[in-house]
Length: 149
Image (cartoon, rainbow, N blue to C red; front, side, top):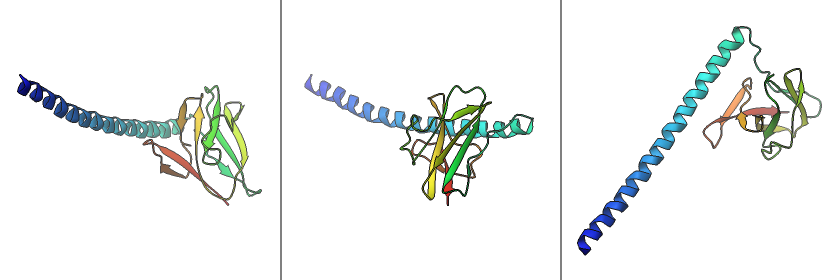
């Protein structure tokens, strides 16, 4: 009887190890699916802007002492914030103001490269669709990059 219990225990352990490996493997495939979906959304967003839909504007730098004006067009949004390494990714720090569907915020940033995103309706974190440069973030997505001079 003891041999049988040991056998069942070993079977349980081996099954658990393989089960965890399967779950980890599925988790990576979900990330790939999300990347695929994001690529498809970006492509459809580009064709939408060609079809007369106004595309979101990019962030622009001004030469006046490192002041950066962030703009994002989203008439359906109820709130938009800009988050980045300059505000510890805090979505409550820099809430943008709505001006007829264009959300705007001006910040004084130190010279250098800064990563940022927009937070739509307190839940949806998106990179700036019109940013000239993006980098991979640790969550499998991308962050926009702005270079302040």
